[in-house]
Amino acid sequence: MGKAGAEWADGTPMAASLSRPLPAPCEASSQEGGARGFLYPAGLRVTGPGRLERAYRRRIARLEESLGEREEDCRRAAHELELAGLIERGTARHADRLESELERVRSQASRLLVTLGAMQRENEQLRSKLERAQARLAAPSREGARPSTPSRRWRLPFPRSRKR
Image 1 (cartoon, rainbow, N blue to C red):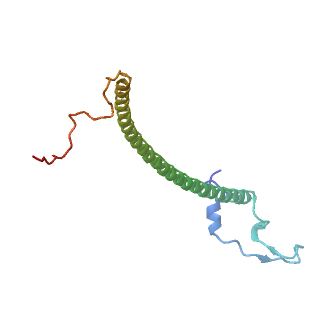
Image 2: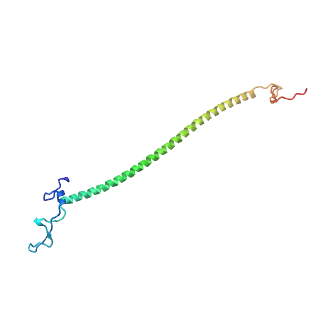
């Protein structure tokens, strides 16, 4: 039974009966032997909410409860979405920092490779000089020649003054 088909026990639609006022009460007469109170005309007894109205009120209560739960779920989902955004932004910033650090390390590694290559070349040159020097020392020296004396071809970097 939907909202449109809801009826009272007497067959009147609920929407129509809610807009009309209740009948005016009559004073109970002592002749009728009724209890003190009010009687409604045509034998109408008002005893409280009927079966349909109680069901309607229970349904409203359930809907309000589920609305409260859904609002709480919405607040929780909004909070989780905000946290996810913060985590995503922080992760992106951390990834950017890691990428810049990686780029710095790569450029440093390439500079170190160039430096290492230059040192290796210098090491090879020093090794060949050392081998030549060891070969000269190992060669038999001429007799009478003094190895510490510079050769006659050696000249001073400036001209000597000549006396004539």
